[in-house]
Length: 156
Image (cartoon, rainbow, N blue to C red; front, side, top):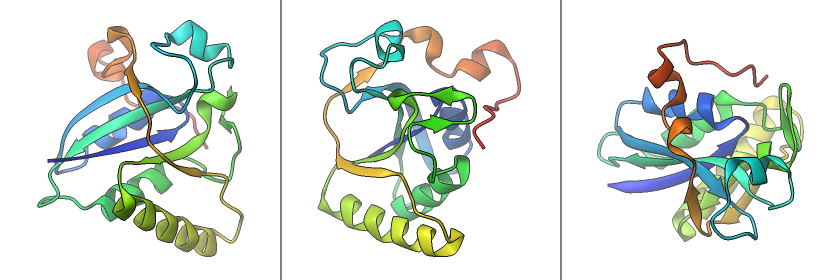
């Protein structure tokens, strides 16, 4: 198994999308990229911690590649938006790829360049080395599934 971490706005819809990808074996929503230990939702929403709402994706590389996951990431949000997705505004909603090794970093950079060329606009997505990933509160995990509602966040 392998791990990838993506931030693309509201983590509810992003998680729901990745959960549908064949080869994804698990997901968790949480906070990463900030400077406060053990953050919680209200604190992250204040914009004072530097964290992004993010999704940790566990996957089977024999069934789905990191490049395939990058394609899902680019398609689930508007990577040209800085610190916002749809109605959600703030650094916690930024577009970011948190890489776990040099191979992921190289793949993410190449994918970003290709995406920028394809859409013809500058990409605002940060590509940074992953730090601590803090699990979000239980009520955020698999939010749409737990409530039996259609998975969507108006990101674009």
